[in-house]
Length: 440
Image (cartoon, rainbow, N blue to C red; front, side, top):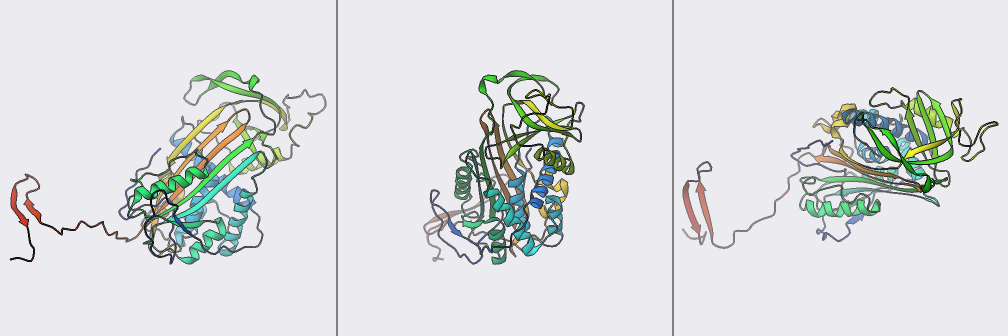
């Protein structure tokens, strides 16, 4: 799914510049960009759970729209990464643009310092997931051309909510160099899982780039035995039956609710878990639980008892229960997924269209900011016997309003020729050699 983008002033894969940073000589492709940062304010402790619920509801909406567009395709996305990239852009939105974005992002009804406090708590909760056996790493960055201005208040808000700093790269004058530097940063943050997100062509005319990168490497609390992995049939979305490799394991929490059978597969340390959701037989081509139903399912899974707990009386280990909550064995396919999509059209369809139009208001970011011109995400997910490796990178782009870029100069400082020609036929009407412009 690719949405073509044509913007005269430029696109942005994320959105920002350092206010008052001044111009600096362009660094070489291998040189690290110069970093500046707004003032991060330590806010009062806030509850990150409303933001987790918002990101879940937003992610379900995006996945549903994507599935309807490509019902036979594997899809992997990171709601957390996408919400971060768009959330950083949202901090610069005003008026109707802010209301439309907040609605699509399902943001809690909070503004100003309360919003920044909630976002700060959300970021801190993500950082706390890193623990023995589980690596969770993220990187939020704002990339800016030195010629553009970003408001200091915006830089402070992004630093407070997301801990993001500004890196200056020659986006307008040397997009190839800028693309290389940004891609190198994303590749490093995702441990090489996403080596490339941008191209020089995609950055042509871009003034700001905002990126979020997320990496996960987590070991199962109860690893699957590779010796039990064996082929089995799978009814694919295209109607065909295919053979896939199934991992087999036992004694996981399970819940049946709202037409879904859910299994919780915990990772080491218990801070993270994968929830596998199986729809009922005869479900539509793109079945998805509602956000409320998913909240009920995950709450019941959390209340089902710790992993590895002995099954109830008279229950064989690994067997399922007739009740809506219990424990069961699982046969789960090994998967290796990757997706990449331009999500501008999809997000417009969900109600964020004004943010992509010339009517957008991003004056909280910069007086030169026009509208979001690009939303890209790439993501990978590998599920195997030992655990899960996943990565995602998101880029949200902002178009400047009236940025004029001085082209590089060709100096005619020696004898040269002039040709006046008919462009349709090539007929040379006049031809001249200028040996000395000062002479008559």
